[in-house]
Image 1 (cartoon, rainbow, N blue to C red):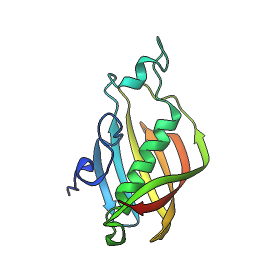
Image 2 (tube, rainbow, N blue to C red):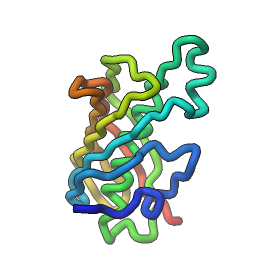
Image 3 (cartoon, helix red, strand yellow):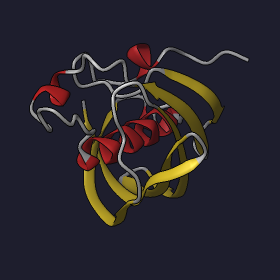
Image 4 (cartoon, rainbow, N blue to C red):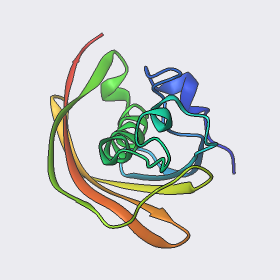
Length: 141
């Protein structure tokens, strides 16, 4: 099964789009995606020289982008822009380095026309790298 390209759905664009491919989708409920880290991404140059590591905040952002992708499949958000509203219980369990592929999962916990809450996780080689709960607000485009 194929799903719409994230570049066609999300307002995020390169170099701030952190989803490579959607692999599963239940509109308004959940999704899975991949983020392939090639190693030439801009943030690896300074985080950290000699030992490049994906910043944890960007793992959270990739989960939030997947959450936005799920929400934007709902007709109530056709003319809305989902914005990051908060982050709770973020945990980082594993270093993520150039060449890794993150498997992202998100589940919408609460959704209304004004915003919502989701939980998400990022895995590398089946190992949990990051988990977090995310809140968002919906504003007019």
